[in-house]
Image (spheres, each protein chain N blue to C red):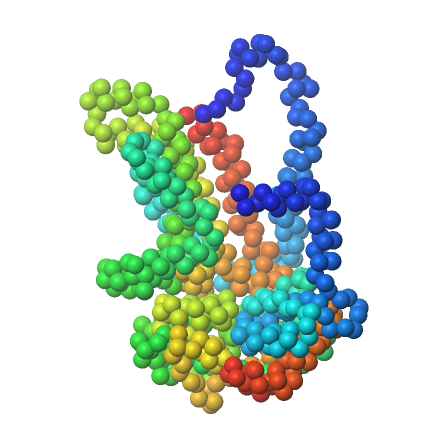
Length: 281
Length: 255
């Protein structure tokens, strides 16, 4: 990790006075503009929330169903991402073979893929006419698209890279000396991984899982296309917002409350506690 | 690094300058009565091909004009217009959607559409009627009830006295067509005009008139149209005999 503070030698040479700690105005001005630009849309959205009708909007059973499907599917997607993603992150961080850098890039493709393209890609892989379509039907006796499982799969696809990237960084930075000590004491490789390495990076796994869950909760494009947006089955809170925007656009901001609340809690909490701990480990 | 040119342009030219150059380069004709310059037409996605043909007719008849289309779910477009989207003309797939647009000036009905069942070529699930759509194991895509084609689909289901549990509720009718074309669903409820346009990529199963339902398409120039003269000329073409011929050729019905 890059040092946060100047090294003792450097600080002895030029003591940073108060005027030095304050960035120059040429940097402060665009920074303030930047934060305003990022904050304004969310603040304006909160301003548009029809507070007086909030009760009526949230007494709608469809909203609660969509919220429940969102929360549950995001939890399941996070669980799957943990099972697959932590080992993947370990391999990416520790396996020194040619081509591992390419593999690392491939893992992050869903991070930059336009959401709708993500949906098309899932059809191409797991759809009826997809590469694995027949295998999916053979194993499960049903097609994957337009099912609750499809919603979870779409979320794993877009959210797991967040977990992998976060945990991979921690595996790289983790102190190898402790692992070597365990090896000297005769611990098996699996035992070292499960009892030494994973506990070492636990804060990052928690951080990655929370990021992953938050991303899965907000997942929209691939879910819409691959899931089908059917109320009670595959309609999540984000896809319900799309439907609501077409008929009652004035009510749509109200549905952003739970999602924005989660984003604030998760990301706010992460920045202060977990990410810093993870960086220090 | 695709963002870099944008950022550089904003910083160097200044945002007001960029905006000013945008509005002057369009060659629009505010206030004037000459039919020239660019217009923006917001239209129901079912009109994609018919309006594409009419665009060629229009530009050929009025050199110096150009049309930018935004096709989508009528209800979605209506929301965008109400939120200040700069458009000259709006063509909706239902009168109620048009009624949501407060800035529409004297909407006029210009065509109509009915529903048809579209299946992948070869009709793998052997769908021959609306009732077949309710069979277990038959995967059906419909429009979301929030958009006009979804409203019409609900009417057709209730006319046929069937309860269909759709596998997918799509955001607009072209997405339903796409789901059918890809073979991911066994059938979709789309407009007659969509089956017509999809050609060999889908198989059409007509719905009898006793069960079917019609939706009327209104069109209007918008109050704040940047180029009202050209907008009116385009609306006139759509309502003319030539316009009707194109719509009929694309599977649309009388207004």
